[in-house]
Image 1: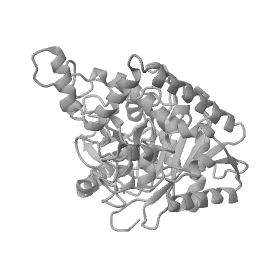
Image 2: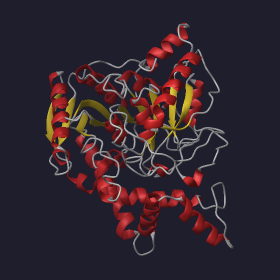
Image 3: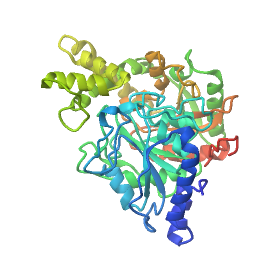
Image 4: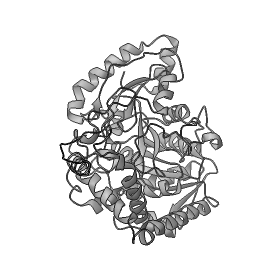
Length: 474
């Protein structure tokens, strides 16, 4: 049953030929046999519903552990929230339940979504299902690994600077970050509020489209949520005839880009050309500022958002004689090193005397980057790049070098800064059999064009609904 798509499951459950309880039991058995090695899940609670109706009737869905699920542990993979149980569910969780989905469990992640390998999780290690010596990417590594390993057909993640697309590339699944504002962030524990977006993992474009259609709904509880301008498709076209694809030199002519990754991505672009798309070279000169701009804006917002985790309210706490010592000791004891690093960076760039030099300037550069993308989309419909400069790297390879880790997201960061939709599509492997992802970006609200492109890529890539079974079998 682990090879069924979400679309197939929902159709069979509604027709009465598949019992959602039997499906859940089969997938739970698979998880119990394999997840001790992979480590995708943090919690596997008993399901509260087995629906036989709705768009996602009986479909098992995994949820990243920074998305609130009422009365279930929601830890952000941090010691700080290890025993936190939210009194409410995120809007996306409510939408899943209303659509008939079976909520399978909460997935591992980098602590507070800060990382690109899921190595900063304080609770467990997640391994790449294609090679257990490699990272699954991050920060949504648990969701990506769960889908890749056949534990569930679809999952939710969050993307602040590539946290859906980069692990999707590492694990050989589709990872889709919608337009900023397309999906409610109510109930998402915030990292960078102007950058965060809840999105989708799937093994097929149709499944990604199905899940996106469910969660892209208006929500008055999130003032930034407005999916009204997005034209959602019930069925995806299977061609890109006439689509214009831009290739930015700034994404391809870089020293850090692995030659095999570049070759696989360029082959995929040529396949899209052969199927009716036109391809042209473009320039995005401000992309060289994307990484420093992102790490100023994101850390500043993180510093503000994580101030609430102080030991005085709903988090863990340590013993102290006064409130100042309580807050200081609690944050030192229960935050991990990467989280503390980013809080300190963010506090610094917001501090008196440095605000104008760093944060205010970064906001201006962010505006320039967004305008440059808008200008580019007057000439092209899609912008192509690798999703990540390399395939999945080995555990510990970048853990001691924060800059090298940050550069794992060099191709994904700019879409968050500009607020545009972006997708990672598996299109091949390197010589070692590790997946390679093609990233495509589109203008705001053109989300369906990316899902259509994913469907076209499935025709030539051979990656549709491919499962990592752990023994070289697909």
